[in-house]
Image (cartoon, rainbow, N blue to C red; front, side, top):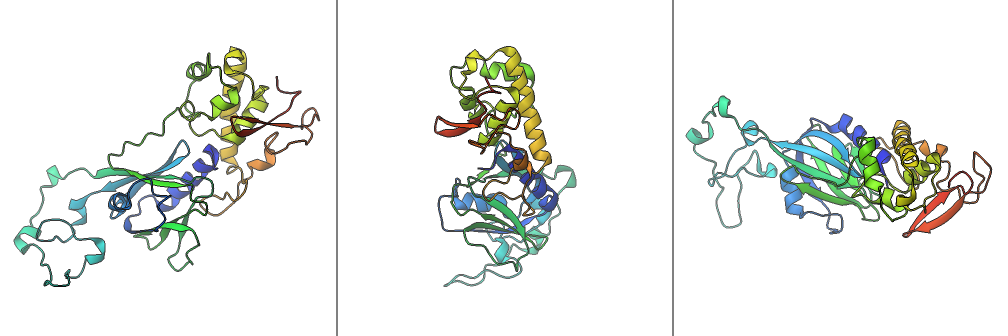
Length: 320
């Protein structure tokens, strides 16, 4: 599963490519698993919205959206509701009715008072990539990959596609732009708060690091690497770790995450960034995925244990 560095890398790449673009239409697949919010809500939030920014929150990619119906000046039905995008430019007909006429010109052409123009309506589209999800910016003529679950047609002429073979990824919207991933950002937390997060906890420190309600975004790879750099065994109870050791862990977590982001994350399995490029931090792994291989510091074979159902890798000599 992509962790903080991978998601940060993808979000930064997407921000460069789609910020300022407008979503003209949305296609959603028939598989229900990827849709955490109803399809109708996702389409309503996305269609005719401007992508104001793209950012990471924990392991989620958040698209900040803006809608401004006054600025778009869409034609209207007799009930005053905006016509769907696919209906613009022509009258709408139903099976047993005549074309629905727009409002009289006197109503449509009324000029709004610029001084009271409403602020853009804000919402958010939230993407969790799950195990195998990816977001791809494509030209419309590009063949649609198997396991594509969402296609956003952009005003720039490109398409943003969500592809997820295993369907553990999730798509949702926050209509009030109030999404909260929970936990604290590890790159923003200060030392005192970091110490308080783990003080007195009886769970293994590895499990505490993976608890997204405490620190959001840290996963298996970077927990193992941070514990190795700080010299702490993953099975140690958090309550037994001294302040000095936790301070070293605080520094290690931040260093490891920043280094991984700089190298585009770790390409384990099928991870690639928004440009389809692999990351390189896996080349610097000291313990993760190196079971039985010699420690790069002391040559002791790396051990693997299972803690709360998750694999953990450590050096029995370097980590206490």
